Structure formats: structure tokens, C-alpha cells
Length: 173
Picture 1 (cartoon, one colour):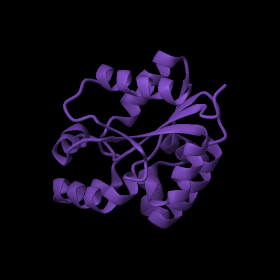
Picture 2 (cartoon, helix red, strand yellow; picture 1 turned 120 degrees about the horizontal axis):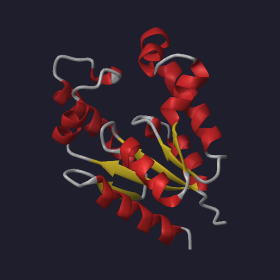
Picture 3 (cartoon, helix red, strand yellow; picture 1 turned 135 degrees about the vertical axis):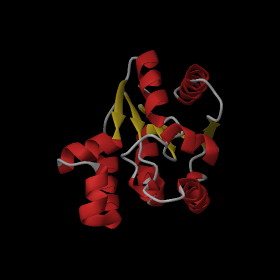
Picture 4 (cartoon, helix red, strand yellow; picture 1 turned 90 degrees about the vertical axis):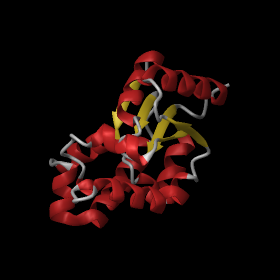
């Protein structure tokens, strides 16, 4: 088995990490894991509730702990939360055992994909498109630390899956 035993999907909310990650896991016979789901299970509450009651700094500490634990898993497609890259140690931990790929999309595409979702605490604002632009600009240097990138704007899931599988196969040789 290659030292890179996982695939790790980084990227902003709405870039396709969940949907694409599940499809990649199915294609490769791997197990799909969402870091946010692991955090919610560990904390026995939702991400939105954690943000509301304990704040973002607390959430980011728990996220770092869960990311470090997930890095020790094997045969997983790991979808990270959009802000996991804010702590560079998370990237290093996850890429130590996984092939990291950053998914991206335009702000407009992201808003279109997430506008009906109610579990996005960072978008609970009057002008979500401006907030997306602001967060993308702020996080751009953090996302750039992930070497591999795929723009998912306007692409069908299957096309993105094929690209990820090709990257995985090259990196695993």
C-alpha cells in the first residue's frame, strides 16, 4: 500500500467535496468520511450549534483534533470543512497520509449550490454572495497551500470524479 492511503478533499463550502467525495469513494471502493460529521458526532450537536454556543475558535480547535485523528485512517476519501485550511497543521497532517486536492468554484456557483441549505453558519447574513467573495479572498492563500486543484464550476460530478481518480492513481504509483 502506498504511503498515501487516503484522498483528502479541501475547498470552500459548495465546491463539491461531499457529493464528489462520495462518488470517488464508491468508484474506488473506499470509505467516505466527512470531518464535519465526525465533529458533530464527537460534540453530539450540529456545527451551527457549536458556532452559536461555543464560537468559531472552539470549533477550530475541535476540527484540528479530528483532522489529526482522520489522518491516521486508511482507505478513506476525507471531505474537510471549508475552513480546515486556516490551520496549516491540518493540511500537513491530512496530506501526510493522503493525496490532497483542493476543489474550487466561482462565488456565484457556490451561492447557487448552497443557497437553500440552512446549516451554513458563515452565510447567515443579508448578502451571502458578498460574504462568499470575502471569505474566498481571505482563504485564497490558505487554499493555495494544497498543491493539486480542480475547478468544479460548471462540471458534472462524473468529470470531477475522473480527474480525482487520475490524480490518485498517479500519486499512488
